[in-house]
Image 1 (cartoon, rainbow, N blue to C red):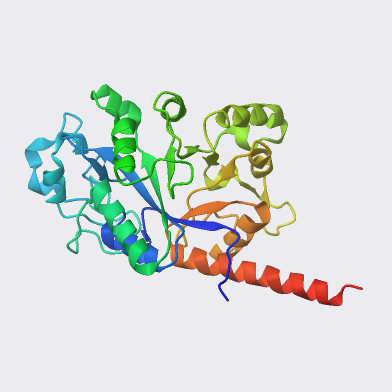
Image 2 (tube, rainbow, N blue to C red):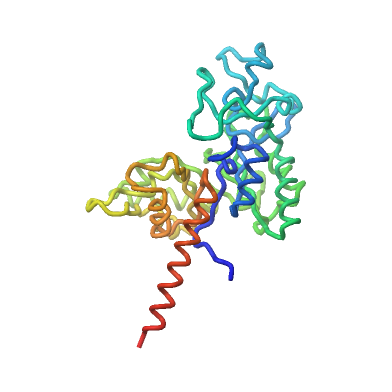
Length: 331
């Protein structure tokens, strides 16, 4: 019998705990690990092609500084929007590193500056996922993020429209489509819904803010969430907006954010679950997943999708066993 998870797993930049983020190899690995969603951060190239890249810079995940040393801007950075998609795909993608020192951000992960990886276009990735869905019979969804749309507007580009057009080209057009579109920019995400007439599921991303966690900010929190619910279907807060330390030293407890979001009919997908960098209030990665279930979280962004899948399946199975035992012993 298939085991059903209570919490869905979103592969954060693919299986980024094991392979260089956003490469097709990382997405294929996450797919095989059983993730429910595969995330795509999307920016535009010079020729207006959406490419899958965590941010607007190329110099933290590719060898662009070696290949095109004269193409940096006055701030010393290399921007994807200054390169044709063909040029971007000619670069060697790498595990994320500091653009000044070349040292890996996560030292225990895949060695940086090694391997023969590429930066994919959004079309490349969708074709991979849809192809795997066909060959496996699964229906793994995609989870694109509109990265820094304001920057793109300043460059004379409409990132949101380009991405939505590309999604539509592959059949993602309605609320029932297996896709969630996310963005940190609140004005832009509202524009996506209201001006661009997007019918897809939308998630508003947030970094931790006082209104999300303070106990005396209940009214403000509920008002903010009610506004988000006018144009979005969910929120994606950081982990530290979800959990509070237990004063008795037990499993960290949930803030009221999840309850308030659900009351506003919003799903909650916090970021980011990392086995090698989880919040210090938790004793283990397993305990973080236990707390997620207790908090009623709907899905999590995870760098280690295999571990998240395992923990949530085990917790769901344990809950099922307890329920069956309670029913069997009931008078």
